Length: 257
Length: 328
Image 1: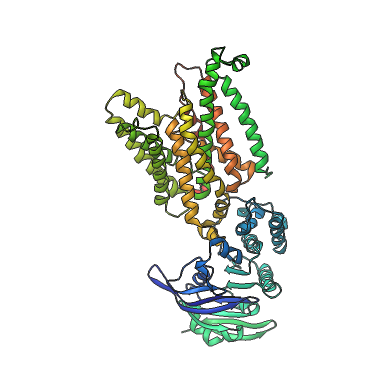
Image 2: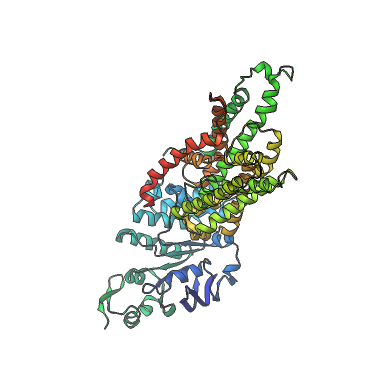
């Protein structure tokens, strides 16, 4: 049961965005993909989700090429949450979360099972109070939670989220990450996130991939992947790592010369 | 937002439609009493009810339903509440197809030539709309693309009028620019019905894909929607339903704009919720408008398309004003 990228390369608009990325992911853990702006994090996640086709190399889900799966087949196994997606209509939160059930709907519309999955997702994401409100009227943080709930409603084995913490205050960011961890560790899902906050990545991810200019420059447990010399060469900053109460704390001291 | 289920709203609209249907059989310059309906031909007014008004009424239901369903599907696909087959040039491109067969003198060769040309015209109109507006969901781009198609096809029709060989042809061509249901017979029903039914059957099952498109194209794909297939079915469905409607009534705008917009407050904004009720609502609106047109005391009957434009123009304006802030 694995999701794997084998030598994935992709150029967009003449620029090599991904250059020979090879990585394998197993279910039951949280993997964070970090890296500077423009490193190719989102592009890699889109390739892994089967939404972008690599120029060369392949993405496989349990050994089968992900591009060979039909749309609904893929979507029943893997949920992809885009960063701040557009929401075209004033649908209420419950209907929005219900969109996550799209690949599972039977011929006659939502079943009792579909409704139950939506309610459970609303519950888990603390959205019951907002269920009848229009998504477009939610605050950034509430909207981010609605997005996560939409991903959960699909009951997929894999959850790929692009910057899921955008707009979340520290409390809700912690809640969201704890939820991702629970989903991975207790329910055995495979969770892949792109993150900007290195400290949160260090604290909540089981494994971290560091991307820079389309290449995988480091990967491993937070201690290994977020070593100060790696971070200073990738981000161009001087960092110091402290032993925090809940894992390593990364302090950015300043720009590297 | 107190929402009703699509089934409840559809049942209410269907009931309204039945009432309008009966009024439509009775209403006009000559009011036909019930005794004439059941006279079985003994009363001369029996022929008015079943020979003239019944085809006209069925046609109003088919065409109004097709235009509104086409509008609702286009709005869902483009995520644009201003999409309408008439307002965005699809009906005009269908009319251009019909007019060309008349101008070239091919329409008389077989009964299917003109409707087929109208459907091809509508299909090209939809394709041009999607092509010009690209895969963006920018409302401004869509409206501009529609305006361009409208203008180009309108110019084509004007050219055909300009170069028309005789006054009879001018009159025929004008009929397609001023849509109306007057003097239609059961033949027109036979021409329009297959396209409307098949087009409708292609559009109705798209609800789920249109809902997923609320999240944009990438979002819909991530939910497993096959966009190429959705696009093809939408374009084909609109081409068949709108093309075959325009082939028998000419251009009637704004039905597809008004009806989904009126239904959304009742049904919610989800595109799938308004699809089937839009057909019923469009049928009711068109039939109601046609009854009023028939009853207008004027020397010659006001064309349905003119009445609809007088209703739809201000409606379009009001929608634009209310959307101004989000468009700027």
